[in-house]
Image (cartoon, rainbow, N blue to C red):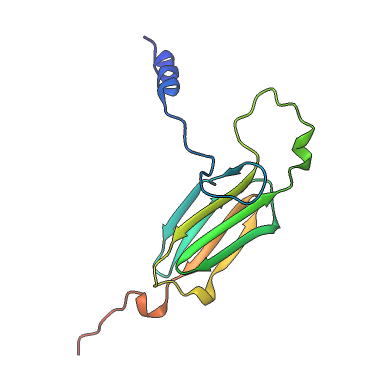
Amino acid sequence: MSKETKEVTKAKNRKPEKTEYAGERTIPGKCYIPKTDIAETENSLVVTMDVPGVKKDNVNITLENNILEVDAKIDNSPYESLNPVYTEYNVGHYTRRFTVSNTIDTAKIDANLTDGVLTLALPKAEESRPKKIEIS
């Protein structure tokens, strides 16, 4: 069996990723779970989320009871008349929820949307940041 055949077999046997959001929704249309990365720096958590086709005015970010929720809606009208021959990505709204710890300074959260990528900076509260203890 050639290397190429092995790769095709692996791809066929791969389980599909869960992309459609299964929670309760109150908006019509499909809703997807956006691909997300979370990185930790010394001073913050950085959340990077793919939300292609979403405009800044259609993103709603809330933090309540330690639940960070992102809802991003797209304008479906450009896609309604299309008759796709082949597609690899889904078009729809995006939603994602995370539980965040009490160590986040909620007053200083920053959000930026550029080229379909939403970046959230969740700064750590001063009291939760590592401190160097000097020996006297």
